[in-house]
Length: 83
Image (cartoon, rainbow, N blue to C red; front, side):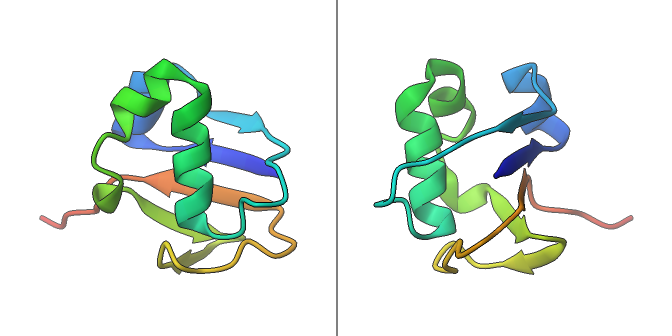
């Protein structure tokens, strides 16, 4: 699956997207975030407060409890603000 990073996540990771192949036990968006943090120090620091990281699977915003299933693209981004 492809993971895309937006806004300050992209800046802190110095990466806009990456192709990943998480292990089978990574079943939800929350699991994916924890797995990404466990494999990279920069990701761990960038996502220290995972509850602030919003997610979308294949262009649909979802909660962290959502199963990844056959997701092709998972987008991770900070909360959006209006103005």
